[in-house]
Image 1 (tube, rainbow, N blue to C red):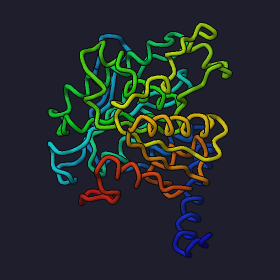
Image 2: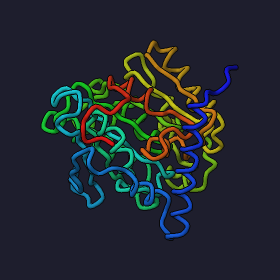
Image 3: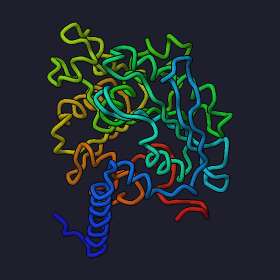
Image 4: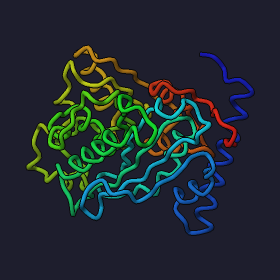
Length: 309
């Protein structure tokens, strides 16, 4: 085992101090940590379009983060990432993930963050259908947004990772809206639940109408040799979504089907800080999480435009 370098220790100490400051500021101001974190994220490293309708329902709205013109790669050659947030299909909103939009857009990706129907008002498969419709919108609008339509990825954290996996693996949902998983360049799962029957979590039980939950609601059941390539990331000691059962089994199934898959496990991150570490102020807290994602997207991990801080 190699010892950490002085530089890495200094980075971690700095990251810890920033993370502590974020939490302290949240407590003192009675704001959520996410709101405070978003307040520390630069606003001059991307272009933003908010509240765009991808469907006719009031909740079917999305935000778009576009790289600045000087950011590599040039418009037309950029990947597009549709990111689904987590929250046990019960909580969450697109505005809380500006830090994710900034992290990827500042490095050259066009990022789409949609809202989707949440439980208990919406239950399975409504949120999967919303996710597929948002991806269809992204496929149809990629070129207009300056992205390569052949480089569209889906990505999600926790329950959002489930949404991404279902859209990428189960062809029913994109098929319903006139698209196909074959149009995707890949999918990224961050601590996603891919095989969770029987359902234990009370909120997930409501979201999936337990015990009347069909077996084919599980992403693991839809892996085929034609599935898109994948990047699976998780905290090795995640106590909310067990990484061995979910990330491990999904990786094994993809490999058995001959699908390229990369796996990254992080010893110093938790279920929550895995996603938080994408934020600019605390990117080195237990990570780094950005390099494997950027590599998977075909982008450089470092910032490449003059507006970046």
